[in-house]
Length: 177
Image (tube, one colour):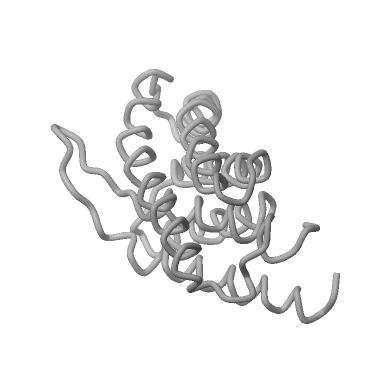
């Protein structure tokens, strides 16, 4: 991988982390739940633009910053990293025009299934809380589904309007991770 492409990926990853942290306070009510969709939307964008490993790195960095600032909990890690990884893998499974939908589906599956399982089996007991998998899966879905749709719509519109310029490639900024 060329140095120039690595620099582009690093800059874009930093931008994704900044967006996730800067807008992490945005929420909306959905029934009795508060939905925080921004991290999940960023996961979809990072999955499409950067690929699975960089997207997971963005999610980990954003989670660490939010936890350090006191605006996130330890559930931020399993609630974002598996979704970002699966978003990147989902984007890779589809043609260029369908990448945002594949990334959104991957994000929801990764967050609601893998992330909720990890949160209930590892994080919950580690912090002394007994939280059931179905409870966490529903809670994670309340933020993951709207956020993933927001991210997919943003990625689709950005591609359609050619906002992304030379970042517009079949599998993101660079073929290799």
